[in-house]
Amino acid sequence: MLTSFLPTLRQVRRGDCELQALVPVEEINTAVAATDYRDRGTLYTAVSTILTFLGQVLRADRSCQRAVNALAAQRLAAAQAPCSADTGGYCKARKRLPEAVCTRLMQQSGAKLEAEVPDAWRWQGRRVLLADGSTLKIADTAANRQEYPLQQGIVSGTSYPVVRILVLFSLAVAGVIDGLLRPYQGKGTGETAMLRDLADHFHPEDILLGDRYFSGYWDIAFWQRRSVDVVTRLSNNRTSDFRRGQRLERDDHLITWRRTERPDWITREEAVDYPADLTLREVRVRVEVPGFRPDVIIVVTTLLDAEAYPASAIAQLYRRRWQAELQLRDLKTQMGMEQLTTKSPALVRKEFAMYLLAYNCVRRITVQAAFAAGVQPWQISFKGAWQSLTEFLARLHSCPDVATWLEALLATAAQTQVGDRPDRHEPYRVKRRPKDFPFLQRPRAEYKRCHGA
Image (cartoon, rainbow, N blue to C red; front, top):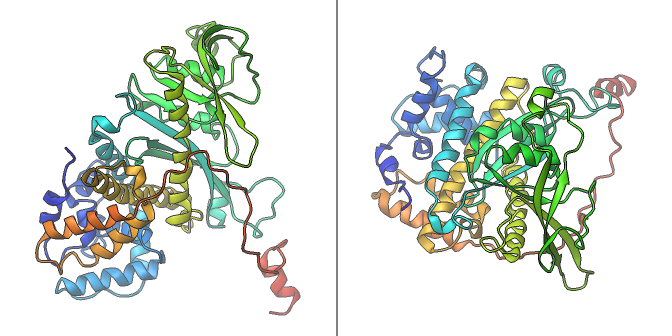
């Protein structure tokens, strides 16, 4: 049975910030206590700073001014003197806040969601974690460029620095387990390297579900040594021949991969413990979309037992890998994480962690709404749940009974469901034309000097 919101909601007294229903004060204080942070004033404490930061990324208008105005309105509702509309105090408090606090709160939110998964939502009774990467733009400041350099050939002042992210999702509840943000290029910035840095989140008997980036010999061996099974797509560097190996059934066979050249991330001493070959399973999946030629996908997996894990089940599991793309879209497009606005590297990482925390807060609504409605969490619209949550939170204190308030929130969220459209094909094309402004090829200040602005 999923843990209800009610115990947390009943602790939110009239006048308290409604966001305490999502991130309890006790959890914030515990995360802060693990650091050397000390509050300096009575207004922007660690609790008020975290909740103001959370509200900033949860709402459509993510400006610091709106966040400070919301804090002033909340203080007025609590019969306190409203704070100044100047954003300086909030920005300084946000800067002083330790990164570890934001990261720990985000990780705790994902762990709580994953711990409440009903057995019926797991795949074959096992926990499946999705890994996927993407890129974000960050504010073009000297401090950000120093730690997150511009791509080669780009003139400073004409573009935004790009960072690489990797997010680890739970397949069952679509929540974020953890995420990393790194420079776009350089050692340790690839998706496989970033995922290895998250290895502590995997337990024995877990399943890693990923795209072809994670199908290298040494990567699969890395996870097998940790008793983690892998389901991924065959790399472009390898070919498949179903006439070879041990045939299990049509389009399903066992093969042996020989050890390839040792990569730089494994030392010679560590390589001794890796096997000389791997026995893997290849499943050929035919994707048929009306109006298009059938697409053939080769899925590689360490799940060798064809009776326990039929080829059809493997194919269905890999089809669900697309959920990672949709969940990244929810983060980047729906929540507006495509471009982070903070101006220092530490704040960039805090902002990233707060987006993941806010995402998990919305996912908690979809999980409980799905449980109450008897459906899967991925069937509940993320955007619909997000819209419901922001509207209902603003009216939490005006409802005399929190149980009625929560029931109405979950019922509203459950009514906005998404369709099951497997194997859909969407061309990479846009309908809206860009504006006819020329691209910035020199810093803006130079254009102003040339035009006498």
